[in-house]
Amino acid sequence: MKLAKEKLDLFGGRSPQGNTALHIASRSGNKNVVQAIIKIQPCLMYERNQRGETPLHIAAAAGDVNVVKLLFGKMKIDRLLFGQENILRMQDSEDNTPLHMAVRNRHLKVVQELIKVDTEPGFPVNQAGQSPLSIAIDASSTNIACWIIRNMPESLNHEGSNNMTLLHSAVMRRNIDVTREILNARKDLITKVDVRQRNALHYAAAAAYEVNNILALLSKEDDLLAFKRDCNGQTPIHLATKNGRFGAVKMLVNDYPDVIEVLDNKQHNILHLAAQHGHGDIVSFILKLPEKDDLLNTLDEDGNTPLHLAAMNFRDNVVDTLCREKKLNIMATNHKHQTALEIAQKSEVEATENKKYLTLKALKEAYKYRALDPDDIIANGSLSGSGTCTTYNQEKLERAKKLAEVILMLTSIVAAFTFTAAFTIPENRGIDNYGTHIDGICIYVWNVRSFVQQSHLPNAHCLDG
Image (cartoon, rainbow, N blue to C red; front, side):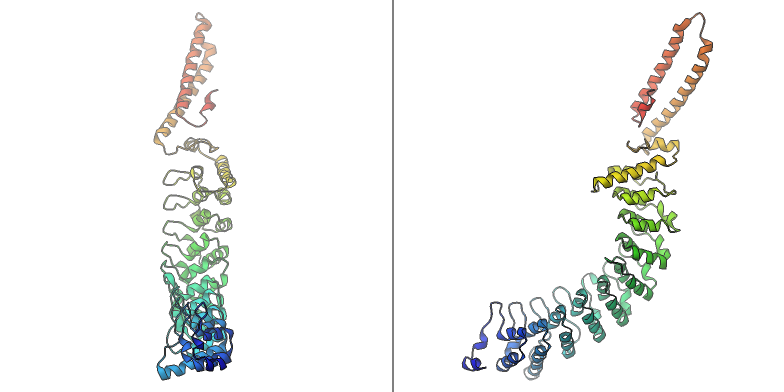
């Protein structure tokens, strides 16, 4: 006070960051100094530093409720006398108000004081699209968020990016207390969807950790939520399966068994998604359900079964589990006429050599030990899976059929010749004519062998003998 009387321009100075003496006093929490400065230079309350912050921004961020009361108390008088701007709504360079600062720094008492004295409706939004309540929810400041919701339920009108409601945000943060508080204030938010047509249950099902309590709370409020589809045609159970949330999948299946059969826009059922993303625990769970037979061999829009998707992504554990199912159609082909083994052999998906080896091994073993018809053997080359399948190559299939006919004819000729040769050798012709007959058969066999080799059929060399 002595310096101020001796030097009238004392309060005209600023720090390198543009802070006035009142900014610095507000940060330090010295109420007496703040009061003295306001008395001498009241206009300093409206000055901004280089970040656009007023002294009230600084005091709110520091959390000193007494300094905050002093600053907006003086503002009330100035507004009545001089029509000064409302410093409670003044925004910094990022459009944050003092309330934003108090919430971000978790100062509940300051938040309560600022809201009580602010008579203007609604909350301003900063450049990041955040309201004070959305900041509290994102920061998991449960006590602040719940207090704001109870005292200003209209703050729930705010929507963030992609039209996400604050209920979406609370569920994504796995905050059951805030979720319950929001539902008590605004139950209608449970049916609101974002730009991807996803409701709060979609986000709960896909959450990073098990959120069974939130799932139960949401589904209790609306039984139809579990059947709602997003822009990809996926219900909450699809997202839970894709993200490997076993607890969520189990709960949704138990509460809403009909969702098991729902297909997304790509005609994927939940077993497709579990197999594609390698979630072995979910695959095993699904295979114990009564509906498994309807899911096991279902084709998606590309004709792929769950085994195809597991094979092309080298999900070795899932491939092994699926191959043990007796009702699995291991010979199923997709729209490109590829079996699961073929698609694994040609897949360019990145995976470790160990996963590739184990995937191919499981498939080859399944081919080897399954009871196959002769037509399946011809169509799939070798049972080992080492050759390239030509199931739907019409030309080679015809050649294979001709080969089968030739072999049957050869078998008959050799059998007949062997039986009759010993009894029909002409006495006057001797062994030479007999040898001629042998040569004819050998030439015939040699021609068959050449035909086999030219056909490029697997294991053709087995006919050499």
